[in-house]
Length: 185
Image (cartoon, rainbow, N blue to C red; front, side, top):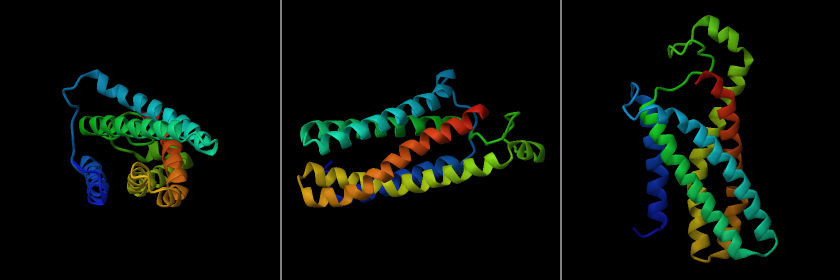
C-alpha cells in the first residue's frame, strides 16, 4: 500500500471508528485467557517508553542528529502501533472498567459514585481530553511522517510544531489515565 494523503485520511477515520464500535457493542470476557488482563500494564509501559523516545528524538533533532531523530521517531511510531493493537485486543475482549466500580459489577451505584468523589470528574476530564487529542493526533502524526519520509522539510517542521505537543500529551495523559483507573481493574 502506498503511503499517501488518502491513506492518512482512511486510517484517521477507520481507527477512531473501530475504537468507537468496540465501546458500543456489549462484550463478555473473551476466550483469550488471563493474559488479556495484563494488556493495560503493557499499554502503560508502551506509553511511558513513548514519552522517553519522544524526548530523546527532540533532543537529537535539536543537536542536528537527523538520522538518530528519524530512527527514534520510527520507534515511537512502532510503539504507537503496538499500543493500538494491544488496546484494540483488550477492549475487544474485556468489558470496559468504570471509574469507581469497586465491586466490578459494571454498574456505578450511588454509593460508589459518592465514594469516588471528585476524582471521578478529574479522571473523566483527563480521559475525554486524552481521547480528543488521540483522535486529532493520529492524522497529525501521519502527516508529519508523510512529510518526513518524503523529505518535505518545511512542511514537516510546520506540522511538527503542533504534532509533537499533541503526541506528548496523548502519551502522558495515557499514563495518568492508567494510574487513575488501575485500582478498579
